[in-house]
Image 1 (cartoon, rainbow, N blue to C red):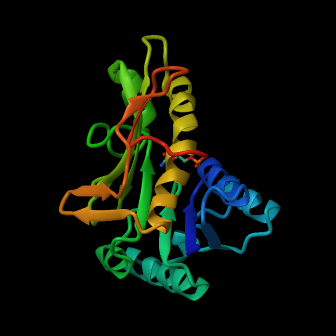
Image 2 (cartoon, rainbow, N blue to C red):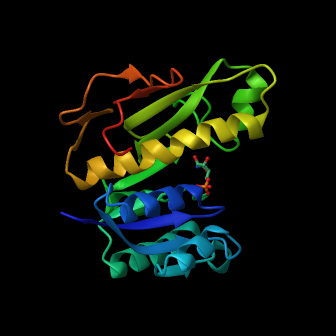
Length: 224
Ligand code: GRF
């Protein structure tokens, strides 16, 4: 059954774009009911307009507290008819009451192999630390930042001459592949949260991509 989703953004919206393309190509069985940005200048809003998607700006600066902002956000999501909330570069921490309202149906993407390098500027943190393996994670959102049960991770190489931008670009390419896949699993009802773990029903065994050795687990299915 087609999953109605709300996509929350704060910036350029390339993950939003990857999700839109996967839907348009009928690889992802979802429908975007609304794109919401807390930042009026987010370029991702242009992407929503270009694809004739409903969008809203809910500027956190207009609200006195996190709870007040989150209540308006939750109402807009509910009104749109969305059943799942997809955080795609959304740079706000959500309150426990928001999370519990959509419990088990909020996904986030983070540009690192969690639990390493949580928080902002993870790409730069990884490059500066000199890691040799970097990557990205899609996880369910709980009340702690970058902490909830993990759905899928991709590992990419990092090099001594990388900076946050070069490494970020390499990571982003795989964000755009694992996020639509994770949402498709959610749409198919194949994700089961068991404590800290996520079981993906009928997932394959991890194997490195033949073209470049990038490791994704669980592996991407056809079309992703
Ligand atoms: C991505 O790297 C995402 O992992 C992080 O913020 C960035 C957003 O990029 N949370 P975009 O707005 O999807 O282009």
